[in-house]
Image 1: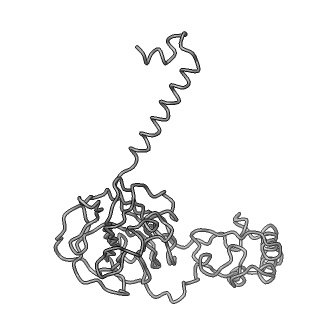
Image 2: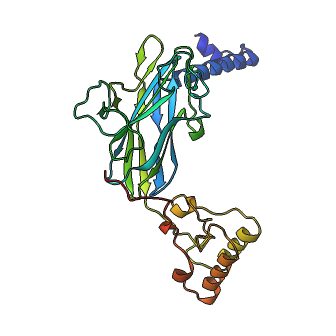
Image 3: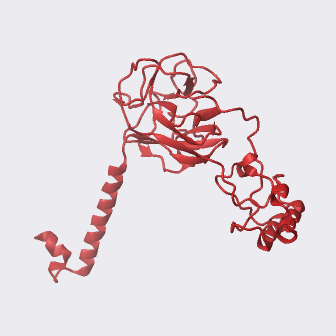
Length: 326
């Protein structure tokens, strides 16, 4: 009956006492809820990017219940859509400002490590014909690692951090890119579609944490990278209302002479490379008097936009080669 009395069933219980009781109960609920949320897991970020994008950064978020002294992270990069994949430039690394790097486990200095760097990052070019590793893995890689490979789906990355003198203490990476323990940075091919970042088995090691006594297999969530076609439909139309008019001229003047902020579209490839947003109608890299004049010519003098305006989707990243076969 006591809980019923506290719920207000007895008018003789003082309101202040009831308030303190519920305040303590709420604090206990929040504390237990936070503890229950912590688990051993590795989550790879999923995101949508434009075809041909450079330096895409995908976060790899770590959560650990126990203090861990070793961390083995094998990843398989695998095309879902043929030709839609990572381009030649890619890198898997510990985020320099993330939780792992700021621990003794993720630090470059190790009190007792094997004769290779800590952390160790290697790349493996092709899966074995037979899976020689247990666990929920997508493929098995046992060949020697290679440097500067021509990426062909599927390929694997392997990151290992080991330090018996310093752990990664229990905690959880905030689900914000800058807070991820690891980052996979890459360019993507020009082919729209999808590819996946899954876990796998490398040199007979699958994904696991080591707490100094046991090997712990964390829950894993793979990432899906969706590559979409370039869309610059609002270029030379800063208002994005389907027509180039005096309002667009004013926006260009504000950008060129009044230091107004530029307007950029996430899936317009040129905007991420060398084009100064919607008002840079000649793709020169800056909005200036020439862009204003061209907008005036089209909006007020009947100029031909096909002759006066550039196409930012045609801007190709520097030294971009053709997409590798998948």
